[in-house]
Amino acid sequence: MDLVVDPTTEKPEERAVQIEETVGNVHVDNPRMRAENVQVHYGDKHAIQNVTIDIGANEVVAFIGPSGCGKSTFLRCLNRMNDTIDICRVDGRIELDGKDIYDPSVDVVPLRARVGMVFQKPNPFPKSIYDNVAYGPRIHGLCDSKAELDEVVEQSLTKAGLWEEVKDRLDQPGTGLSGGQQQRLCIARAIAVSPEVILMDEPCSALDPIATAKIEELIHELSSQFTIVIVTHSMQQAARVSHRTAYFHLGRLVEVGPTKQIFTSPQHSLTQDYITGRFG
Ligand SMILES: Nc1ncnc2c1ncn2[C@@H]1O[C@H](COP(=O)(O)OP(=O)(O)OP(=O)(O)O)[C@@H](O)[C@H]1O
Ligand SMILES: [Mg+2]
Image (cartoon, rainbow, N blue to C red; front, side, top):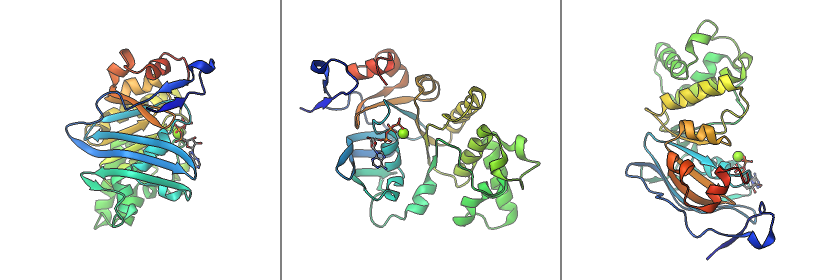
């Protein structure tokens, strides 16, 4: 049995919290991704411990939990973004459509097109709106002609809910858009290469409520076509956009379940404490 020290509890005698194995069903019938016994170390620090979870096709899964619990670390495992951090080591197995994404033969560039990512802070390239979206299709050689590329750019911007706002200024810099528009541009850039999965790490944390509402609506629309994993600090947001919610605590996946159930009748006391605002 593992005893985990909970630094957020005031009384030392209550600090030892039991996390044996994840509560709830970590498997789904139609998995797009499967993570099994994933461990992540940064040097000696064991940041993710033994996480097993499936991500179903066309599902929106929300990762929630206190700051530092490992949400971003685990999210970055799903498209090997942690490879870019020298001291980071990932063990265990992660599959996309049944294939091990950590197999040495896997090229991370096409992998990161299949499993795209949208970051906390909108990060458009210092290029035109058009070129931001056209970038991926160009480097992956997805379009044979300018007309085809134009079509992909228009469709991606339309799906990202941005086309009407930018169609007359495609040659202007992406960085000149508002924060919310920039984030939708980053989503358009991610979907331009037809990913299977889109990872979003707190995609609304730099946005105002109106821009946030637009992105949430967009997540809802995109979920018919893509699988989405979203990290959020907003429980309201998790409740609004996701089908399943996974609660992380000190590097462990404590509980996973249908979002409504997690927020109305969580099984684990740690989940209960978090969603009722006792810590986090
Ligand atoms: N590049 C890194 N090098 C060393 N340690 C790291 C690195 N990134 C994260 N960590 C550590 O791993 C643990 C998990 O961090 P992570 O950023 O995944 O948490 P998080 O749940 O996303 O937190 P937040 O909600 O604040 O974004 C933390 O203890 C953090 O300090
Ligand atoms: Mg984070």
